[in-house]
Image 1 (cartoon, helix red, strand yellow):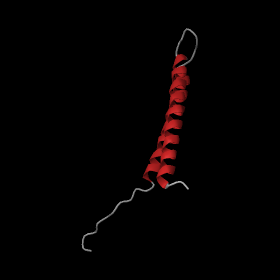
Image 2 (cartoon, rainbow, N blue to C red):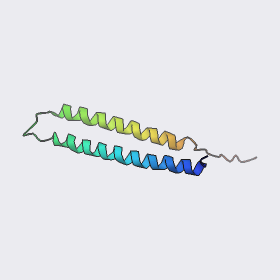
Image 3 (spheres, one colour):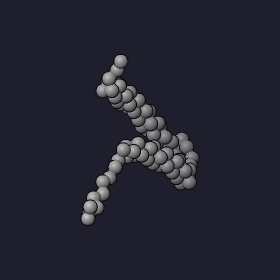
Image 4 (spheres, helix red, strand yellow):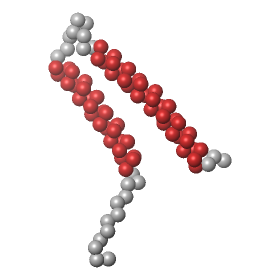
Length: 84
């Protein structure tokens, strides 16, 4: 039977492995997207570029928000009332 610590270590290792692979894939794809900026090979306008980066910004914000929600699930505050 696994201890809680062992299970936690496995989850952390899996997170780090997957996060590194997925982050590197995203960064590579963003570099490839940047290659499209070469006007010798492609024609585009400001609206095209804005649409691309608005979609990326929106998706990035949603992903970050998901992490923030998870990290703050156990956040509790204590309010000290005067006159207890």
